[in-house]
Length: 333
Image (cartoon, rainbow, N blue to C red; front, top):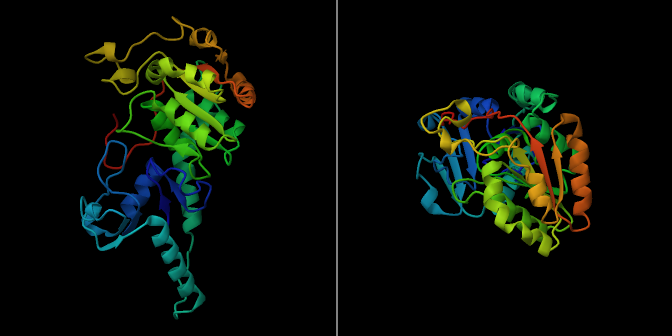
């Protein structure tokens, strides 16, 4: 059985597992469309801007496990309902499958065939265009180059990363590999811009030995400015990664053209203001990076100073690149 996780559950299943399909993108759409049975665990299956619809749901067998019975049959016809805690339900399912495969109940199990190889091929094809720009030497820096280098620098088994509203959410949830529970916080619809800072603080408080990184754009940074002093006052070694490209993503046509109201998109960019100097004046370790070859070393220096309790802010001068995996049943915005 292939695995797909929702945005908010990203990291609940290790993303280096051979049966992990993804959170969003073409490979996820492929498996959601071809599936004939869906086991939905811990999700309401309710529609949202940052979630998948189930295509042709009436033709699929849906087994829905949720602690809240109000979510059953809320959006899609449920063939079998399991009301209860997700952990307990999965433990019972694992035991039942193990018993059947061992012959305790007379069953021999089902041959997995080439499923793992098929999943690997689908992921490779869907992610190829992102991996290409994750190695790009173009300037301004492609945001995916920053994400790829961030994954290289971090210990993905001992770190926490979260995004902001807009393209940092869209892009990171498409490509960022999360290997441990609570190693990534995906969110949307329920929190204000700037929430990545609060999330990174909470993660650092809960797991002090983990590197904690908030990845933000222009709008998110603007909303968190008044709270940056908390990191200094509380001596919290957190790194703020700023994808600095002079625009708000997701407003009107925005990056896609001038549109009817460019004032909702155009903001002061790196050519008009140097945010590394502004935030450096507070006492942060700050750097301004415009060359792709400098991304890794800048991130390493930031994480190094974090170990002494000093926060860091790195401004990466990036291009506007609104390319990311889509949600099934949701048009590109």
